[in-house]
Length: 249
Image (cartoon, rainbow, N blue to C red; front, side, top):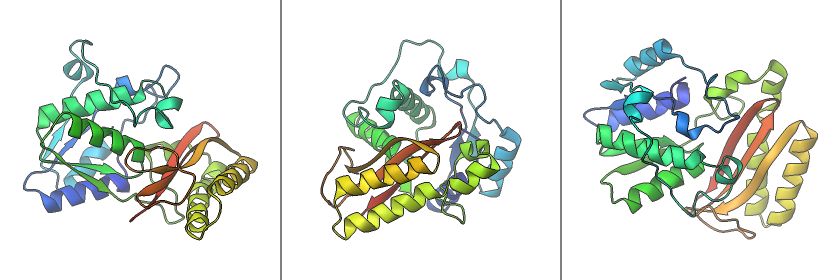
């Protein structure tokens, strides 16, 4: 959706290295924002975005207008199952907007590969389910989360953090990493999750969820399992942060 940062740049560089032609779409999609979310103030930094695209070797930048993407509002895709919890529960309709716009962008560009960042882990699973369900001939490449030096996952919304909040924000990733280590060593999943929520809450975070799920279905787990992830979303001030760590087989 634009407001590109080094995490996006890493996706662009990988795409450039693995394909003859690399296409970047920039579109702030209104249908994935809820009525009280930040569509109107979502950062739009087109000039800087185009400079990053050029530096990363992008061949084509696709910049559709809302009217081009939605000439009418008679089409909406829904992906069931994987959308029902976590972000889907906290942001009703969000993943309908994501699935619809990604399908439209795929239809416009006709890519052979599409690159997504792991930070938006549930979104990746939604898109994967949509691609599989519609038999789209597209290979999804999920790239590792790019982080600041202190561990904070890079996000366009990080710019909303006050200086004090920015100092606190890396605690989210530290707590995920600590919880992963504890669960991997045999600690109780339920107790580990509860302790993480308590500690984050005591440090100023308003936790939407901090949970342990399987992949790719994103169903909650209570015992250690391969192909799983710890996921969290929490507000710090007015800024909502999401992050995850994955347990690989």
